Length: 265
Image 1 (cartoon, helix red, strand yellow):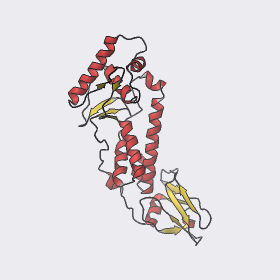
Image 2 (cartoon, one colour):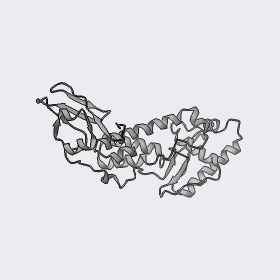
Image 3 (spheres, helix red, strand yellow):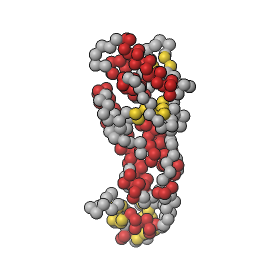
Image 4 (cartoon, one colour):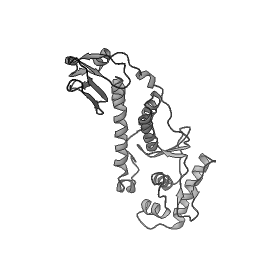
């Protein structure tokens, strides 16, 4: 938490002797030892020493860290981000203005804005990429088959130019447009990074989550005016995913006493 002076503080509520507490909100594990005057605090990533209970009720994080010993992981170790996108040829950026970027970071441009919108819709509806549903979502009026086919053709052409090795697969019944697995969204990468730290809270995985959060450039679909995104609640859904990832990252930085990281998250 932050006090009125803007300093990071930790507040620990003491329990009874011999009682163990686990607080996910504060990312601290607390154990009261046989001696009522001392408690043991176990935040992840810190070497542990016991500290006097009468000095813990409301302790500034920097002081608490000094008393508990050296950190196992420093903020400097997280200064060089790693890319968490694996087997990713194109990234559809949703966390801000819509952008499609290649693996080298350059932006992929479309001649038709509807082609970009169609790709955005498809990556968000992989489980049901039906042509008729896409047409209904992207146009609020009846659209000619030739118009829709031109949008699909432009999309496939742009993808083929960017990555000749990948192409859209048209289902045998031609009712579906299947998105290649090498096309990911920044939201998928964010969720992947968050899942990884839950299974293995290594420095590398936390660094990957930091990198994924750093991809947030603004509100989802900012400036795109996609009516279907709002109608389906996708904007608020993505905002919630971002907030959850930032909360996880802030707790981690709080646990390793990295105030700058907490402010970043």
